[in-house]
Length: 283
Length: 320
Image (cartoon, rainbow over all chains, first blue to last red; front, side):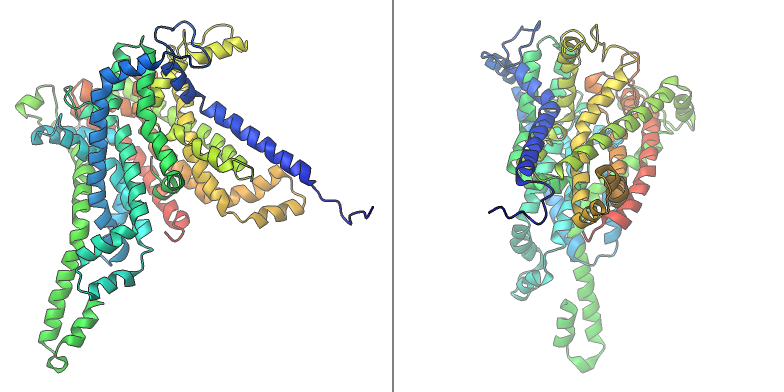
């Protein structure tokens, strides 16, 4: 019974598992520290208004007023943001999907140059684009228009979508499309019926990121709109803190609502997000 | 592949007409291929190419608030460039941009790397926590700026409450209202925003390093720090390069964070190239001078874009 083990294990199983527990505890502590600002946003949003003097550490009931005030004053902007972001996703995917396919699968003269240009565009500062775009928009009558903002915001996601989709479509075997061509389909129908369904996950990822970029856009919202006709939530909140800094409850309630797409993205597409960041390498 | 079909179907010995139709078909195929790319290419030209070229032209044109009614913006040679370079605000903003960018990068990178190393150990909940940590990076920057504006508020901000409760400071720190501290505050907030991005990419890089290499170093008697410095870090270098270059390019152009956090103030202490471009063009309506600062910003980014493409080609293009 007292067979002594030939070699004592370096780490006994007990300490290994307790070390793992310590790691988990440390990870949760890191999480708590780094996410504290977002917790505080939620906390203030859930406190009843006018409790400026001392914010409690835990949300008390009665904070729904803040959300009501936020929605009644900024509900319109939330709808604007939603329309603009969805529009940008549509424009972006319509442009990016065929281009990515061609760049991945066809041997195109100038194809390499275009991939190169796509990488470069990710480095152009938004304010520089806005500077030139504004005067062009004045001439084209696109200032203060939903279409104008949708088109501009699509530029935030397009290079990213092309890089991401192209990386995916490179791995589609050529034979799959060839088979459809033999069956009488043309290049375009083969693309729509075969390539697009195969790329569903990549399209969803690109679409989600484009939505998030457009939803988060501030520079174009600020510069391409001179009236209140088209006012996305980022711009609305920026103007709101300029005018009513005292009503932090409502400001934070708006902040919570405008952070919802980010949270949804994280939950719905969790496994694609990290891949998207490294694959697209933007922002 | 279509060409082989064509030549097989064509009357083989005739010779002349076959290559002609083959060439025409090939041309049609090429045209069709370009139909896939053309819309995106045109869009990129309109929304990136045109602004870049137009900004260069605009920087030599005279814009006034009247320009948008009269349509007149005569060329004025180097006047805008001279005016901008003589403007002390431009020189200051250049310095602030540099401090903001380098400070942010250092903080983001060091903390991001520390977290990446920490999370590459195996323990329960590691994946979930890592995913949730991305949230600060995904939340719109304006939203983060507004939240931090409240956190850092001198009178009612929880940061000062905490610091004073812990007796780390005796009085409330004027984070955003003191010209000496505002840039530091902006850097701290931007570090918070950028940590997840650094963590994710560096974590990915760490996963690529074969575990055996580190274990071998440990068997040879190297301590954790020694292993990290002599084995992990050198192997991680390509990823480090990419992360720093990408970080530089995205940080140098930041506008939303600063506008919503400090508005460039107090006393212009947080003005950067981005905010000055905005101010010159869209507040003073001098788009010519705005274009000059914008071009400087593009030039700074371009230097790093070249570095990025170099690093990207040799190191980051792992098969993709």
